Amino acid sequence: MAVLLVSGLACAWLGVRDGFLRRSMRTSAGTLTGGRAMAAGALYVATGLAGVWGGVEFLLRAR
Image (cartoon, rainbow, N blue to C red):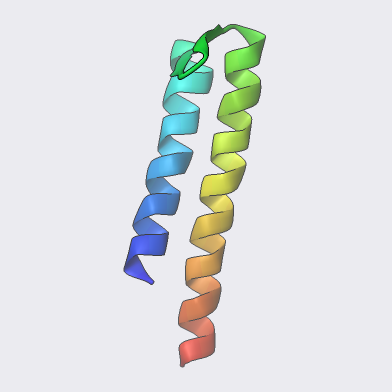
């Protein structure tokens, strides 16, 4: 459960940092810049927040 929370937070942070602050994201296919980096960053943030939500949901159901 802790791994899910930490990995979700890390994923969301990478999305914000690379997609919105730097607006440059390196991928295996090349570097994304501008709007494409922001779109990829938004997907990273959404995935990260879903992971955090899943960890919290798991914690609440375990009680």
